[in-house]
Image (cartoon, rainbow, N blue to C red; front, side, top):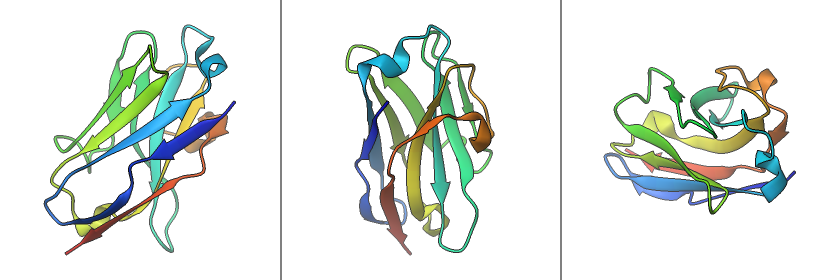
Length: 124
């Protein structure tokens, strides 16, 4: 299983970025799989951002990003996106995508496979 994130970069506060996570086809061989985004700021623990079920597209979000971030998926491309708007300095960190063969979860330990991460830096 391979997950490859892209789309990170440096942006000013209030700006937008769209992250992508490209997955190998077999990642989504199970009907009830889910994809999640997590982030880790320097010196802090990894935290949940958003997740989506691959089949029905149901989503969950961390309270800190509700109304600003949107997770979506493209089944044909085996890609999951994280559209991030109204970015804040506290959104800075390494963003990781992860997948699990079950419904979306807020807990990183529930996810089985992880990408290498992409850096997002928001300047204030």
